[in-house]
Image (cartoon, rainbow, N blue to C red; front, side, top):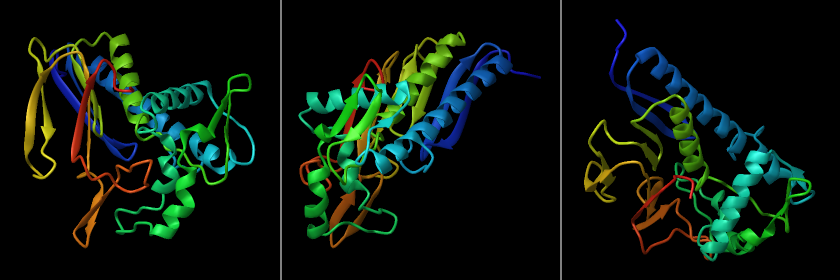
Length: 261
């Protein structure tokens, strides 16, 4: 017999991470259909923005934009524009061109670039080399070697899209998560959602628990994708200035009105 009212949850592997949707369902079949719509939207965004899928728009930009302007969809053009504004606001601390050196790392195989490789590729890490033309809705790179990766913004964008779908479905209490990016719709059926922030040095530990409602929370740390070599931790959070993993912070959590920015 279908559930008439209660919590529903689904998890799938999308965008190279764990995507989860949890919601309060008044009518189970309709709620499950809404969860399916969220998962389908996540897969659509992944197909559009993944740098690893050779037929994605983003992969085509990385292949061709150093040679010619690449026309793109309105959606991708807009998100790249938002990312570049964040780069300006943070004076380059957030930079989607980190991928120009990021691809030199392979955390599963314990591979990292040497000083010579960094010196060769680091000049391409510069968000100002990503040139947008609103008239032709195209993207061009200002120099050879530039690559972009929207991993720092695309998952949050997908989470926000998921929340928008659930709103249209009439869902009032929900949590959508993609990796370290989460957004809460409403509350936990009359109570706050209790959101745990992982302890970066204890695999099963929680550093803090936050009572949250109707907000977004994003966490990233040096414990997610990393390897240790000669006592040094090589992880995926790279400094755009050095091309090396940052060393001054283990984990950062940000709260805000949406998961994209």
